[in-house]
Length: 379
Image (cartoon, rainbow, N blue to C red):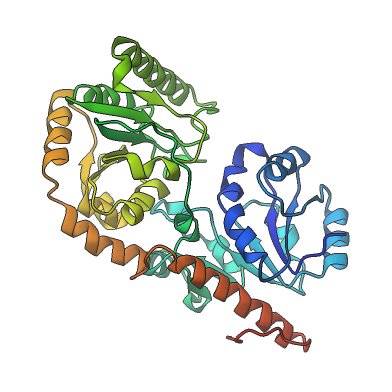
C-alpha cells in the first residue's frame, strides 16, 4: 500500500515524463516534511520515474485500481503537473485537495485554460500568471491562485558543458504543441538559419538544446528541421573541433544555462527560466506568427528581448555579436523578472511551495474535522 499523505499524480506516457521529472527533487524535499508518493497510470512511465527518484511510485492503470489505491492511501493533497484528460478520474476523489502545479511558467495560451477551474488551488509563479488567468478566463476565481514562484529553479545542478574561453550561445526551441494555436516552435521555420547565424559569430560556441519532444516529433517539417540543425552542428564541430559546438538532445536545460552567454528561444518556459536565472544576459525570442503587437501583448518577456521572425543570417549574426558586446535590454529584463517572479531570489520559491502545501494539508484535515498537523490553516 502507498503510505503517503501527498500524491503526485501522472497520467501520461513516457514522452511526457519530463513534466514530472523536473518536480521530483522538489518533491523529495517536500517528503522531508510529509510522506510523498507518485501515482502513474502507465507502467513504462512509472519505470522512468522510478529511475529518477527514491520516492515510492505506484501504478494504477485502470480506474478501479485508482479508486482502490486512493481509498487505501487516503491522500490529503494531490498534485498535478499537467492537464491530462485522465486527471478527471483522480479529481473524483473527494477527500483530498487537488492542486495544479504545472511543469513550467510560460506565456503559451495553454498556460491559462478552463482546466484550472477543476482544481482547488493552482500554484503559479507570480503576477504575470495571475494576470494571464484573470484576462484569459471567464468567471474564474483568482482566489484559487497561489504564488509559489518556480521551485525547480532553486536546485543546484551539475554542469553539462565543458569550460571554454568562447562565448556560448544556446539555441533552445520548443516543440510544435498539440494544436496550431499553441504552436510556437521555430525548428520548422527559421531554426536552421538561426544556427547558421550563430555559427558565423566570431569566437562563439553553439549549443543546440531542443525541447524533449522535438526529437520524437511526428510532424514532418519539425522532424526535417531538427535533422537539418543536427547536421549543421555536426558539420561545424567537424570543421572546428576546438570550438566545442554541440547538440544536447537529452539532459536538463537548466544545467546548461549557467555556462551560456546568450540564448535564442521560442515562446516557452525556457525563456522565463533564463529571465530568472540569467537576467544579466541577452535573450532572443522567435515569432513564428509574424505578429509583433500580439507578441508584445501576450508575451511580456518579448519587450525586453530582441524578437526574430524571418531571419536574415547576416543581420542576425551582426545583432548577436552586438548584444554579446553590449546588452541594451538588461535593465528592462530586471524589471520584467519582477513581473513574472515577484521579488523572489534563488531559494525563496522552494520555501513558498513547501509552506503552501503544508497549509493545504492542515486545511484539508480541518475541513474533515481530523487532527491538524502543525501548520497554519488558510482558507
